[in-house]
Image (tube, rainbow, N blue to C red):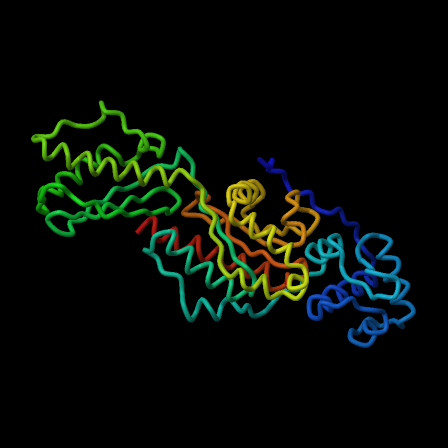
Length: 357
C-alpha cells in the first residue's frame, strides 16, 4: 500500500521585475501554444521593453535558477514546476469573467438533491467550464451521525427509507415489505426508528445492538422492524466509506502533451480507479482555501505529469469533502483557481441549504 505523503511545494525566491515579466510571458505563451518559446518571439509578442538579446540573457539565467527548462540546446524555453509555482504565487492575474458563471446561470445547482446527485451535476459543470477533468470526494467515517430517518409510504407493501447524515450526505432505499402496512402503522414505525436511530453514529448503525431494539406487538411487526433495521445497516455500511467521483476524462485525453504520451494518462486512470490512495491524499492536503499542487511537488508518481487545483466544500461548518480539477501543468491557472473556488462555494451553499431546510 502506498503511504500518503504530503505535498512538498517548490521553494521560490522573489525575482526582479524584469525576470518576473519575462517568466509571466513564457508561462502564458506556453499555456497557449504548447511550444517552447525563444527570446525573439517573446520580444515580438509581449511588451517587455527590452531587446531580444536581453531577453535571451534573462532566459539563460532563469534556466540556471530552475524556473525554466530548455529541452535541447537549440530549443526555446518552457516553465518548470518551480516556474509554474512562482507564477501561481506571484504573477497570476485576476479574471474579470469566469466561464463557470455562464454554466451556473444556465443550469444552477439545486438544493434538495442527494449529495451523489448534486456532485454529479456539480462535476459536469466544473469539467465543462474548466475544460479539465473534475473530481470530488465525499468524506465519511464511522463517527458520521445520522440526523434524520424518514419513512415514506409508497404502497401497502413498499416504503421508502431516507437517511440524512451530517455533511449533507443523503441515501435512500426502497424497502419491500413482507406484510401490508397502511400509512398510520408506518407512522408508528417512523416514530420508533427516529427514537432508536437518529443521532447515532455510523459505527452504531452498522451493528445495532439487539438490546436497543424495542419490543413489538406481533411477529409481523418484529419482522417489519427487522427489515427497516437491516436496510439502515446497509446504508450505514456504504456511508462509512469515503468516495471519489470524477467527470470529463476526455478533456485530459485531448490535451496535446498527453496525446503523445499515453502512459502518463494511463497511470492517472489507474490512480482514479483505485480511488482510495488518491482519496486519502486529497483529504490530507486539502485546505479551506484553494490549493494548487504542481508536477514534481506530488509524492505520488502518477500525479507528477499533472497539476491539481482543489478546495474543501462544506455543509454548514462541517467539511464534507474536496472538489477540484486535474490537468496538465500547462494549465490556465488564472481561470482554474477562481473557477474551483466558485464551485466549492456554490456547492457548500447548496449543501448547507439542503441540510437546514
